[in-house]
Every structure is written in C-alpha cells, then in structure tokens.
Image (cartoon, rainbow, N blue to C red; front, top):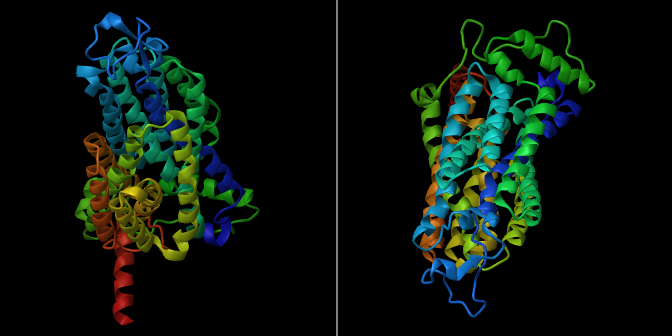
Amino acid sequence: MLQRYAGEFGPWQLRHFMLTSVSWTLGAFQGMAVVFADHQPKWRCTSGGACPETMCGLPHDAWEWDGGRRTSTVAQWDLVCKDKYKAGIPQFAFFVGYLFGSGIFGHLSDSFLGRKRALALACAMGATFCFLTSLSPSFHFYTLFRFLTGVGTGGAGTSVFVLTTEPIGLSKRATMGISTFYFFAIGTILLSIISYFHHSWRSLYIITSIPSFLFLIFIIPFISESPRWFLVRHNITNAMKVMQDIAKSNGKQIPNGVSLSLDCGPDQTVVSGSIIDVICSPVTRLRFILAVSVNFLCYVAYYGLGLNVMNLKTNLYLGVILNGFAEMPAYILTAMALNWVGRRPLTVGMMLFGGVACGLKMMCGVMGIFAMTSTYNLLFVYSSELFPTMVRNAAVGYISQAGQIGAMVATFVVVIRGRWPFIVFAICGLIGGVLAWLLPETSNQPLYDTMAGLEKGQLQKSGATRDG
C-alpha cells in the first residue's frame, strides 16, 4: 500500500522520522554521560611540591583532587589504587541493564504494549533513573541507578528503530534506517560540549535527564503507532487510519475499497509472537543464530575500539567530539552503498576490512573504527529485515542483547592493553565476516508481517530458483 498508494517516503514519514529519531540523541546523553562522569581528574600534592606519578603511596591528607570531589565519581568515592577496578563497574552495569532492556521491551513492543507505548515507557524509565543517578548517596546506589538507566536506554533503542522504519517504503527503508544514527552522533557531540561547561558529575546527570522528560511531554504525543503493529494485532481500522493519514499528508489517496490484510491469509489468527517462534521456525532459526553471532563479534570490536581511546593521552572532550565527527562519513557511505551493493556483501566486506585493519595496529584507529561503525549501523537495518513484524522487535531485542554482551567483553579486552586488544578485534572482524556471508540477502525483498508469510515467501523463492 505504501508503494502503490500512500507513498514510500514523503512529508508524513519525514516528520515521523525526525520526531522518533530524537530518542537516539537522548540515548547518547544517558549512555555516554558515564565517560565524563567517571573519568579520573587531575590531582595535586597539598604541600605544593613535586609529586610522584601516583598518589597510592602517599598519606590521604598529602594530596587532593584538582577541582574537588564533585568533578567525577572517581574523586567522589576515591576509586583509585586498590579500588581502581570499581571505576569500570558502573559502565559494566549499564551494559547489563541495556541487555535486559533490549529483550524485555522487545517483547512488550511486539505484544500488547506496541511500539509507541514501549518507547514512551522506556524513555520515562531512562529519564527517571538518569535523574536519580545524580542523587546517589553511595557508589552502590550509583551502580544500581546506572543499571536501571541502561534498562530504559536499551528498551528505547530497540523500540525506536523499528517504530521509525516500519512506516517507510521498501526503497527508502534501509537508507533512512542508517540515517537515524546521525542523531546518536549529534547527541555525543552535544554531550561533550555540555560536559565541558559542567564540571560536576551530579549536575551532568541532571542536565542530561531533562531532554528526555521534554521528549515525553512535547514529542511522544505527536508520534504515530506503527500501522504494521496495528495490522498484526488485527486492528485493521487503526491501521487504515494511519495509512490514510500518510496518504493525505503525502498528497496521495487510497482508493475506496482498498484495505490492508495480513500476508498469512485471512484464515489465520496472528496476535503476537515470541523468540520461541523464531527458534522453532526452520527459516528463522539459522538467521537468528548467525545474526546473534555477527552482532556479538561486531560489538566487541566497535565498543572495544571506542573504549581503547581512553588509553591514549589525549583531551577527553576533544577526543569524543572527534570520534562523533569521524563516524559520520561511515553513515553516509553505508547509506549510499546499502541498496547498490546489498546488505550481505556490505556486511561481509566491512567486517573483513575492519578485521584486517585491526591486524595492522597503526591503521586500526582510523580504518578499523570506520569499518566497524559501518557494520554496527548496518546490522540494525539487516537484523530488522530478517524477521517478520510479529517477532521483529523480540528478535532484534535478543540480537541487540548479544551485542551488549560483546560490549561487556570489550571492557575487559581493553584492560589488557598493548597489542592484544587489536588482535582480538581483528579476529572478531574476520570471523564475523565469514558468518555474515551465510545470511540471506534482504535488499529489495518484501518486509513480511507473519511467520507464515515469510515461510511461504521462502518456499516460492526456492521454487523459482529451482525452475530457473
């Protein structure tokens, strides 16, 4: 109906895309704030004389934090020397929370809650606990609130991508899906600027939570629910209402008597699906296993390369800003090559290229990040196209969970330092490229609504291949 009558991408989809994608900027605020809040500030000796390289051998009253304890959580709770390992725990907890949030909200948005309400609930949770993080009375509460913030951020990330791309037509869906990540890069850059002028970690969390509350009040009411979700819930009336709104806004008209129908046929009742349906289906089982594996390997390399920058002696604020700008060419080239090259060849090529670049340590910083950024973005589009509407968010949620486990592994890989992290990243890229080749191509293929529709389509495709 989008292709024939309502329009694949017009003013309605553009407005919907802009409004929903703001959530990515909020995710960058909540996820990346830890980089500035948990950094180790400079210190000085109270005597004013020359200081040793570390404060660990000094009496506690012989040194002090430059700027006071408010500058970071490391200074607030003295996470140095024997307690240095604790500085990485909140970040680890956030990734664990993100993992849980992706799976939980993936199921909720596929079932009775829907994409829009799942996004609203996840954003409300992320904003609330991001604000409460600023009030943390102890390190343990701080870690708990970072975990709960991660649950909300993970749920929002899973819901918003599907909600953004489902009302977009086939020819524009992948390009616009990649374009959503510009909002994350913009959020990272804005956060760096905000952090530069706010030297208190508590005020930083307060500032970064406010936009999420504004998003819930002023933007969420103007976002439409996905017509595909209405369709699989058998709410044809609301689905057609959204489609009529799309057509009217795009200057088109849906002819009288034309209505939506499920691709499984009218005799089947489909309300919602779960990850069990994905695993039980012979068509989606292998897809799911391969997508989980490739996503895990990509996240190890992507987040590992980003975290490894902290080992370099560069300005923290400038480094994060430059990383945000450096990722933008990857978004542009990926969006341009997506339809021309195809999902599978591009994923394979970028993973292999990133693996080779990481094997050459001197090139890893630039070319490795470029390649893994392209793959990271591409996998969101690719994964969402591998599964039908009734299980899409659940499948994408679990695939994202596998990625977050990879991100958690990356935090430990970076600690090794030296050349070994680059070797690990190279191996991940090479293995991921090989596994990605086993996935089916989804470029210019229908976006199915049900498992029955997908299986029927695969049978027809296999029959056509044999006949040819």
